[in-house]
Every structure is written in C-alpha cells, then in structure tokens.
Length: 505
Image (cartoon, rainbow, N blue to C red; front, side):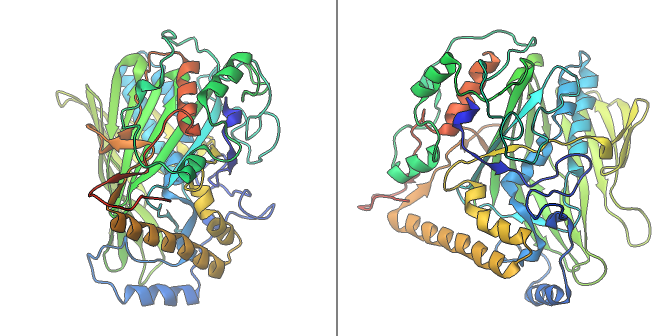
C-alpha cells in the first residue's frame, strides 16, 4: 500500500546515534550537516543586533522575521518527529506487564527524545497555515528493541532501503499482540463535513502526483498482493505513521497524530510555542499537550513540554537551554520533572531532577542527571541517551502544501549556506501566505484544517476516528487512504458570512 504514497525524500534529521549526528542528506557527500554549524559571523551578529535594538523585554517574537542563518533545515511539523525516532523505547514500555514499569518506560522515552536536536543554535521554520507533513517508518517488531528495517538509511533507493519499495504479498504484517481483525468499515468514519468548497486544485494537491486517487483501486491492488510496500521484508515488519498540520498561524498551533498499528500505540498532540524577548535571551514558552495511548492496556499518558531558552543573544556564547517544570501523568502515577537552567554563579547546563509518585502522593523514584547525556532512575537503572539509536522517517509528498514542497528551495539554499537565496525563497512562501490570508478575508471564509478538527481532550484532534480494535492491516490501510486523500472529500474553507465570491486556491 505504501507504494501508492509519493515519497518526497528522506528527512533531514539525525540518522542514528546521539543527538545532532551529521547528516549528509542535505548537502554534498561527506559534508557536515549545516544544522550543526553555528553560522553567526560578525556580519550576522550585526544583523541580530539591529533586530534586537527594535525589541523590548516581553515582546512577542512570533511576527519578527529572523535571519536565515539561525534556521534549521526543517519545519516545526517535521521537527516534532524527533519524538518518534526512538520507537524502541515505546515498544519496550508497551510490552511491560507491570503498570509502574510501563509508566517508567514512557518517562524514559519522553526524556530521551529531547537529545535529538541540532548541535548549533537553530530554530525550525515556522509552518504556514495549512502546511502538512506526513511520513512513515518500517520497523522490525520481532525484537524488544524494535530495530528499524531500512528506515535508518538516508538514501532514496530501491529495495526496502529508505522508500521501502518492492513487491511482496503483504503490505503489513500481522502481530502476535493483535486482539483481532474487526470488520471493514466504509467511508462514514469521517467526523467532519464532506461538503464544502473543495476545488480541483485542492483535490490534486491532496492526492499528489503519482498517488492513487481512489480507495477502490487501492483495495483491489492490496487484495491482489501487487504494488505493496514492504519489499522483501519479513512478516515481522510493521509500519508506523505520522501526520501533522498547521491548524493556526497566529498564534502558531501545530497538531500531530502518530500511530504504530502492530503495537496498538497512538500519540496525539498539539504544540503551541509562544516566543518572548527577555533581554540577553529569548524564550519559546511551549504550551499544548501530548497524549500517548497504549490501547492494549486501555491506558493513557499525558505530558507537557519544557520551555526553550536561547541564551547569549547580546553578550556571551549563544546556546540553547531547556527549562522549567513538566509533568507526565497516567491514571495511577505522576512524574514531576524540572529542567534546570544554569544560574549566574552555580549550577550546570542541561540538568534535570524529578520524582515519580503514586496517585496517593507516595514518592516511588527519584530522577536525576542530564537530559542529553545520562539519566538516572534511582534504584532502577541509568539511561545513556547518547547510546540510543535513532531512526529518521521516510517523508511522504502530501501535495503543494506539504513541508518539503513549500520549503524545498529554502532548505536547499540553507544546506548550501546560501543565505541570500534562502532569504528570498523564504520571503516568497511568506508573501504567498499573506495574499491567501487577505483573499480569505475578502471572500468571507474561514480556513478549515485538512486532517484535524477541534477536540475535547486536545485543542485539535485527528479528524477521523481510528478503530484500534481492528487488525494491523486494516488500521494501516485506513491511515494510508486518508493520506492519499482519495477516500474523503475535505472542505478547504468554511463560509463565515454570505459572499458572492467562491473560494479558490
């Protein structure tokens, strides 16, 4: 089935090993990833100082245009996938019989995810309204470490490597942990309206060039066993999927959905960064929540994020710090963790300290260490995050509004360290969005997200309910049909007042 999803090329994140490993995917062979290079020269410092001179402490930075030499080669939507590049920790947690051990396992995964980041001071590109990023991983579930099959490669080649193309009689595998198949359901699973102002261009963008546009063709090919995606992979291989969308631009709100069908793991979340200028530093106040669901245990874990501080803007060495308190909660346990920032006189960088408590308040475990080195779970074990292998995803071309389409020229220029071109390409994208925003106002319409809608537990939730009782193949097929866009008609806009104009893209 995955062969019907057009591949846009591998992601530009770390390939394996510790955070910020050099990636050659975005530059000349053998070169160091520009995300790991501090590019603030004397001229760059002058540009920053000119911007800073116009700011006041506490000012919102979301509308400030920052120079391209501090930009990472990916959008925030893709940056979120860093959390899902160490699936082996989630799998180990999900397979624990003991509830406390499962909770500790989720906390390990959460803390270990933060070390996957550029070595230099870089921020991701701000997604534009309606921007999407989708990807997948093919993972070997036979071992408790859940090693990736092919996903670790940076090349977009043949066979199972990278794109996972090939021929096999199965698009997905059946897991021994499945509870059962369930019945095939029709297109009535859409929660949002099927009526709207979808244009021909929207339909083409949703489907994308070279992607099957109808579910019937998909099902026919799947049942025939041709054109599937796992290549020569063994039956133990399983696919995990990720879908994200920018549901609001001011303020920025990035919604995401991740599912690992063979393990019955689902993750939903919304990231809402609010930037502030603080003098010699800036802060990204990270609002929003993440929710991890282990369906086999009917168990949910919620978590927020530490804030991100960029120090040394005016004087001193520039560096990033994670700071402030976070919580990871389940029905029986709570982890309260503080990401400590370095004081003027005492303290160190990147330190964390926290406790795991029962719902009655009993302290069960102390957590300490550094989030980018070793983390100690007192009385249990020590986790060295630098030794955890990471698996970058395979990106899917989601049409004109997909991150790699929108920012492709900008990212290519950043990789070449051509900041003049990067600035010009970035301005093209931003100007087009201003034109579209103005047109929506003139036409009296409101933007409607493609994949997400207003939720209850989270501000935005995945628009289609996924029946986790169904079999792995059925769940995977349903997600892929959503990504192809051939199963659902999705309105682009919703009218907010009567208008004689028709919204077009």
